[in-house]
Image (tube, rainbow, N blue to C red):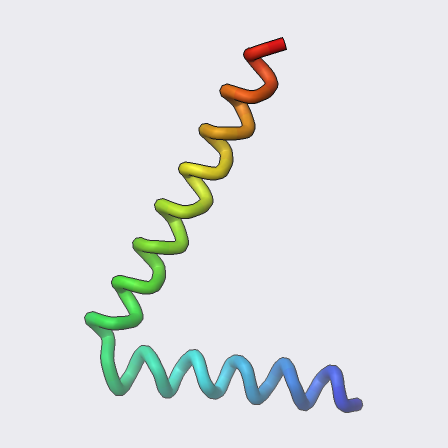
Length: 50
């Protein structure tokens, strides 16, 4: 029950964030994407070093 309520609150917050400031929401998505890409690139370089 609490887990479901927390998930609904998270979704509501995300919708509110996107509606109120779409440019900031897009920047968050872009930065998250770049962070993941850098992480995977670093991991692949680490694996290739062996």
